[in-house]
Length: 263
Image (cartoon, rainbow, N blue to C red; front, side, top):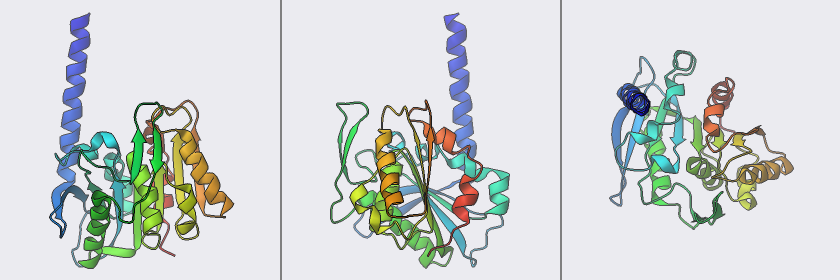
């Protein structure tokens, strides 16, 4: 019995690795070099029949803490598949960027108490962002500056740590994005007014999240509603931290995101 169970685990792992390799083949591996010498590995998915002299919408996707590293692969674990679907490729030709945050850093500026679960996070935005978040922003700017991306159609998505990075990006650069989706994240609600009237946001969270408290999303959404912002909120009953699985199944998510242009 134990042997059969072990075999199933091995087969599942092999299938997972093969699937990741297939996704990886679609997403070209690149490295972004900052002026200060920092390097940010990233993957890029180009539209089918890509034309270098044409401008396309740009989607920046920020992964969670579990996908940090330097292998330039793990960041594709969650979310990369939805952009490979035929319907998206056909209806929304876009440049999709998946940067990878290093193991010793975070997208968002925050103090984390991992001694409790759910974790307790203090969002303390320094004058300058953490360098990986700055690099991700600069990466998008590069694709725009080189004439490949449309500055009026820049979108940001993120899950968990990446959801926190999404909110910080909106707070720091509210004039940059056309729309955003934040999954099981959080941010400094006191600074929500900086993007409330500029960027439509769709927020997702599971009410049983044992890692990032659902109250982080609830408080941000309530603050945005109080500011009369364009905000949508989807909360999944009984769902733990992996609410991204539910969010990625929302058929309206990508059409909603892509319908917006920068205000």
